Image 1 (cartoon, rainbow, N blue to C red):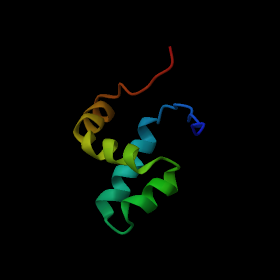
Image 2 (image 1 turned 30 degrees about the horizontal axis):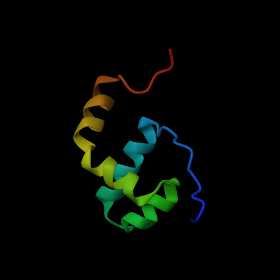
Image 3 (image 1 turned 45 degrees about the vertical axis):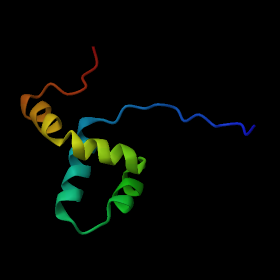
Length: 68
């Protein structure tokens, strides 16, 4: 059986999510290139795109990932 390497789970800040959404909206680069640019997996970028409405609402309300 092959040993699987586990990737450490990291949180992506709101600014990075918004920037990646802007890049997707521009439509200049392919999604794979955008994911590589931000150092995230393509599946993560797909989830960001899927949840774009929630991300925009959170950014507008100013209640992003804030440290306590």
